[in-house]
Image (cartoon, rainbow, N blue to C red; front, side, top):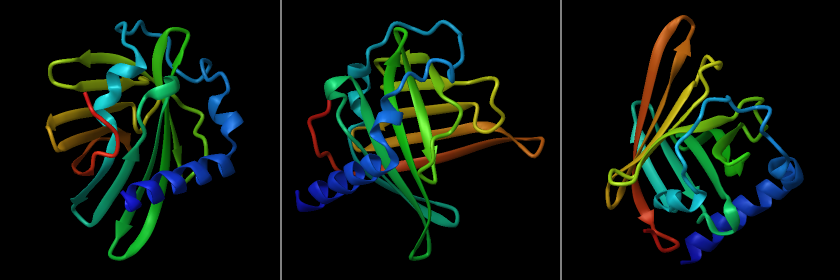
Length: 178
């Protein structure tokens, strides 16, 4: 419980430092305009919790808040050995009736948001897309097991199709999941 409080306190402090007002500002001009399934932010509660996983060359930790209040915030860090080499924040909210996610790689707001394009309640799987962006252009989150979240990051990098997959294990549920 202490670890959970520290993680969320760190996430809140960093987001406040980065400028929460900018985070909440209208981001509709950044997302794509494709019609999306009717999904509420509350249906993404399967993301809630503290997650950790390894991939070739590194380790990843992520903390996702509940969707309470109409938004989900996440804070993540990538390790190489015992060093943090990257941090990222994500902001999930509803813009013009569509759920969007805006990443903040290295703690800086990107000029790109991704609009929810697919949702599978049974699989607890959600796809966000922005076909105008090179890498990434697709973000997939799927709760494959009760204690496993798989994140896929897909796009084109240096002219090649890239599909990065990060299987994460739930290390602390933090808040109730659906």
